[in-house]
Amino acid sequence: MSATAAARTERLTVRYGLTTAVDAVSLDVPKGSVFALLGRNGAGKSSLLRCLLGWQKATGGRCELFGEDPWNRRARLMERVGVVPEEPDAPREMTPRQLGAFCARLYPSWDAKGYEARLSRFGVPQATPFVRLSKGQKGLTQLSLALASSPDLLLLDDPTLGLDPVARHAFFDEIVAELADRGTTVFLTTHDLAGVERIADRVGILKDGRLLLLEETEALKSRFRTVRYRSEVTEGRTDFGTELDELEPVRVKVRGWGIEAVVSAFSDERFERFAAKDGIVDAEAAPLSLEELFLAVAGEGKDTIR
Amino acid sequence: MTPRGLHVDPRDAVPIWKQIEEGMRRLVASGALAPGAAVPSVRDLARDLQVNPATVVRAYQRLVEAGLFAVRRGEGTFVAEAPPSLPKPERTRALAEGALRFASTAVTVGASRDEAARALEGAFARLAPPKEGEKK
Image (cartoon, rainbow over all chains, first blue to last red; front, side, top):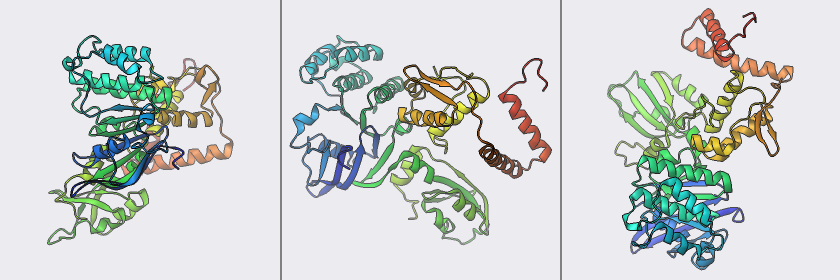
């Protein structure tokens, strides 16, 4: 398993004092795949990423990049890893051109042409000090720097946060092109669910440090549905949703017109059996976007029944 | 360049690779992609649709396996010159499956058989407008 994984964690745990930021998380990212780690602010995404980068020592468990421990092998591993941090970070007075020249000396396989081509494609001025670039330009400069080292693994920490739609589009466009050209493995944390919905092979959902879910995007989307229906018997009922048991509801809301639930074990046959039950009227099922799915699984829920 | 009429909707329950596969089948069936025509490279299509190239590869592989697309080494992917003809039993099965799906839709929306038959004619007409001089 570890021979084919670009990144892997095994019961990885990070504690800050009494707070557990990452709680026994096990996951692996096969080479050439695109993995999106989703979670709200404070869910533990950045701590996990910092461990993978060798910036932080795990409190417990282990993590690996290409089968090696990033804490001990950081310098060597980082040659193979491109990083785009959450907060664009570079010396304030350095221009994109100077940053490129500086990084070229650090990476044996630096692609100077590709770096300049990307910057001009993105419309990033090459002679403007970093501090005076817009947020989008900063992010795209970071991505250009990360890709110019021809990385085997790209680690992106919420890279499109705060970018305008044009910059976001350029960002994902470039990642898709990189995937096609080099088959680079991508590990990203994100709030931008619409952006990753089409490119992520697998997603993990982190909540309060725990991995709630780790699954192929396609499988995930095929088993989740929003189910809406009316029940003929409503008076005095408090057990709404029990008729959905076989579909494994994760969230049930009683609305004026009927009942709306998100279910996690949808199949055509199960749904047909449910819809045919006594007293169930106008049952329909609709697919969820990744964003809706995330909200149902990881959102705060005073309306969560189970 | 992405052929006109090919769209993917990530919100659809149908997997994206399948949407691409079916979209391509429709384009070939309608003649929008002619036999022998070049199809967009995986890279270009992935970029235009903003999907993972692996997703496009999966759709193309299935179309190649089905004989609808052909790969010419070093040149790229093309629509096959001769439309593949399935062996009789498989063709019968594929038709029966499709017909059952269509018939179920017709029944559930409360359409009469005549209405359904007209809709089917209409679908054929949209796919392949009758050529000049050709009877119906």
